[in-house]
Every structure is written in structure tokens, then in C-alpha cells.
Length: 406
Image (tube, rainbow, N blue to C red):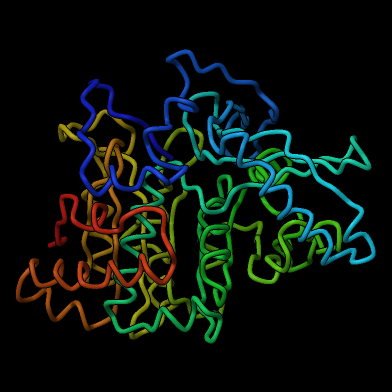
């Protein structure tokens, strides 16, 4: 969920941003998919939600990267992945890349819920075959980079050994509330081998849009409210994703019900849940409601961290968005239930990233000075970038208007 401030005042690129132009999700490419400025889109998915999200649509836009001279390398990679499933075709089957596109998920043809980059390819032996793959390393919207940077550096600052999870030696349990196009859970699952990511989404149409039109892995297991599986991995569905379905589990469920009834303990919880009216459901921040009470009990007591995308702030401090007037209440509610809480602003967008934890390590530093907390986070940022081989700098997101919530 994101919008650009309507004041025509974009912030200058920092040196940290400029040095990351190799990032295919860099904001400098946003003009290709935001709309306007000559960018014309084509609608490839359109359906009506039964869960308050209005008309759900997916619109495509051409992408300038990767350049065509890079496509043969990708075609060779696809051939290698396919040969792992069909070794008898190792030297026979060839692939051709059709091209790359941005795909934007919208509610009511207005609010952008998610933007991803996809690749389309086919087998030369069967020109009618089509494989649509979301590029997991490409995070197009800055608030996702902010959530990941703040969440993982906070987790690491609490003493969590991120290196063991990245290499698959230990399991990292992650919960994502709100699916959108699936870029956040997909990024985590591909970057962290030990990550087991539960995704909770109340709207089946959103899940359908992500799989059919946004290149989310079709082999991912989808679990209904009653616990029954409605989608099982298959050999063809596993290509070109390998065993990614072992890490991703989509739950069609109400977030409050899921958190109340699950018995699982999570290391990291991401919350990015907005409806067709651009509203963060009040029950997910009701200070007296069951959701926040249950949420704390779902967190690992030593390092469990919650990261929330808040869409309602902007660079001039005014509140023209539906959630703008409630941002302070949301922050205080999470502070009340979790304890240690801070926020940062997101560059170029009307978003804040809220981070909360019931852990004690950084909380002790917070009682002394916000600078001590920020320094602890900054000291972990290089480690997070190195371990995950991030195409962007964590530092620019961690330091941006850092504020401890009182």
C-alpha cells in the first residue's frame, strides 16, 4: 500500500541510494510503472472482491531492465532448472525469454497494493507454453525495503544469529499478514534458506491475482480456513522455483482469527494489511482488542519482532490519507503491548515503518538514549546487507527520521 505525496516535492537521492543503481527495484524506475508520464498499462486481471477490497485488478507496464543482451544468460538458467526436473531433456529443451514487465495490483483502480517485476518465457519445443515468474530479488516499492531493513536489523540487534537462518542451518519462523502480490514473503524465502513463511490473506481473489497475474509460485500450498489444502506442489508447478513451496504457506484466513488460534511462535512478523478504502483494520491496532494481546504471545520472548507498514504520513506532516489521523494511536497501541517501539519514515512515499518488540536487549538501551538504539541498529546493518546480499543499503532506511515511540 503506497502513494507518493501530492506536493511534487521529491527528496533528493542520497549517496547510499545512488550507489545502488544496480538494484532493478530502485525508485528511479518507478516512472515505468506508476502511471502517467507516458506509461500506458494493460489490464490482465480484474475481479470483484467479497471481502471489502472492491475491484481487484492487475495492470502491466513494460520494463527497461534487464536489457535484451542479458536474456541468453537467463535462458540458460531456465534450461538448467528444467533439466533438474526432466534430466532426459537436458540437452534438448531450450527456452526463450519473451520479456520483462512491471505488474501493479490495485484495489478499485486507484490504490496500488503491490508492484512486482515479472519475466515471461516459453519452451521452444512448445511455443504455446508460458512461464510467468516474479523476480524475487526486485522490491519495487520503498516501504518493503524499509520493513525488511528495520525488521532484520532489529532481530539481529537482539542477538538472533541471522547467518544460521540464511544458510539453512536453523529455521526462522516468519508471519506475513497481508499478501498483496507476494513480493515480501517471496523475497524472504529466496534470501533466507531457513525461513518458513506463513502468509495470512483473507481475500482469495488477492491470492488468485498474485498467482495468475503476478508470477507468484503456483506450487505454493494454499490452506483454507478449515485447514484443508487446496493447492499441492507438482513437478511442473515447481519449475522454475525448485523447492520454494516448502518454505511458503498461504493461509486464507482472517488475521485476528489466525493469530488467536495458532500455537506457533514467530521470530519475525510483518503486517501490511489495507482494504479497498485504504484502511488499516481497527481490530489490528485496537489497544483493548484480542489481536494485540495474542500477537505478543505469538512472538519469541527473547527477540520476536513485529514490523508494521503505516500508510498515512508524508514529508510535510499533514494527514490527507484515510489513516493519517490514526497513525499516532497505532504506534501507542503497539508500544503499550510490546514495549520497545520505534518508527522511521519511508523515502518518496506517505508511509512509516513501525517496529515493536517485547525483547529486552534494545529496550534497555532505549531507556538511556535513542541514539544508543540507533547506533546498535546501524552497527548490524552491514551484516544484514552482506548475509542476504541485498541490492540496496539498509542504512538509508534505518536512519530516516528515526524516532522512539514514547
